[in-house]
Length: 110
Image (cartoon, rainbow, N blue to C red; front, side, top):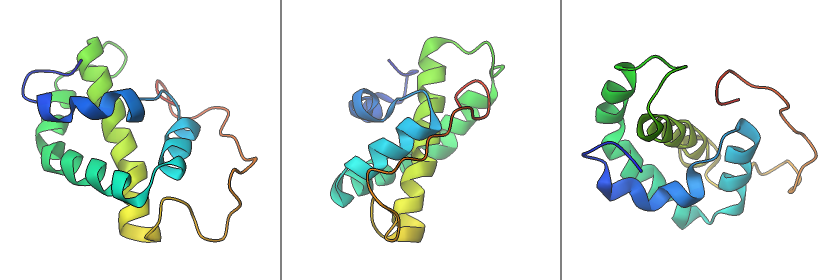
């Protein structure tokens, strides 16, 4: 599922590997703070190595395992909002579920 060296974070692929910004927000919002914290801590420990691997590939032509790793790194950015900024999986003054949908984000993983 992931490039060699990332076996310890493969357990997160099933939940956190989603293709869009909206889906990453929904995953963060639906998770418990403990789940977000575990994902954040494990991913952060691999972040430098992951970025090195991702940087070796063209964003539009990544092998599947590297693309999965890249999407997990995007999910890490979403988790970082919960851990570093908000202190909760959901923003405290926004309704959940909300009706805002990002229809198109940055290519290729909107």
